[in-house]
Image (cartoon, rainbow, N blue to C red):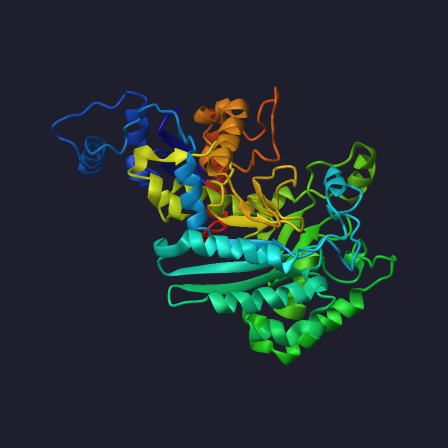
Length: 483
């Protein structure tokens, strides 16, 4: 793999990208010819060099153009790394219930996906199970705990269907707070029960993510268990929330939109922005683990996130405030976080990065175990996050204890790393890879996300073209941290 890449944009500007130096530099037009010659070994130094020739020579002397070859360093997990990640975990997610008062046709709990057979749709998480986990974490944190904020997230199903559990967790975590530890609370909800619990949620300063696919016509896949339309009830609850607690609604409510055949980004963006003053997040339907028998039905619902957003062609039509959680913008954010030296993403970056040449990566885009999230399912299974299959259990909480074997978890990760991802060392996309190995065991198949040098430089040119077309978004991209 090569370190230095010269990229000419669609507008004819030249940029120099240093992979190992994690920098992207605009090349002054008066320096472009000199640098091009230098990379072709045609540039000859002389005593009577002009200003820009001297400048290029200075930069070369101090290593900017060092094009050393390299391979990525790949982490090998051990017990201490898993334990340290759990000590510094930022979010505990409780799968409150698998029950739901909607029956969305594209939901992973329904018949489209293989995952539905693994889930007890009536399952509820018991408070004693959650309490055991919280007590275990408090003991683990112990004297190692510096000032820390942990988000307690309630997930479903529809979490408000098990509000008695939520109430008990809120009361218990209030009891656990100290000068060094505080808790925040968040929830993903379809909004059907917001009117019933609104005062409590506002009182505890919840962050609320509402699932809404747009206006009435865009929401036809989101129906009640008996097939009834419940759209008006949801909208009435959201209007109540906005009118009764306008400041809290403004600060604490976001919307997530699933893109499918019955809606589109532009119309949904306009609807939610006009009605609620919010810029929604957008997610495609998951293409993973669709049942063979349901693939034709899936095709009738699936809409790809549009490529024109990645290329920036339609951004003006949607307005400059388009939320970063569209594919093109988010790709730019991940690239900037990973390959431009502007910020640290997690505690573990500080732990392993002793220098730019010593960055250690997890093969694929998989997070370090528990480095960001810790997920507890309704039956007490422990997973790395809410997005991966329930097949990938890392431990459990039973009637007697919390069972987390750090060595076994490290072995699980190492086995997956070295059995399926041998090409990662040579992949230019590795620092911002979109593949999670829990849902992408490759076997004998090649990785679709793999980028060799040619593909990387082609995509880098595309990213630079995006930034030149949308310069107002550069500051937004640089200040957003990947979650």
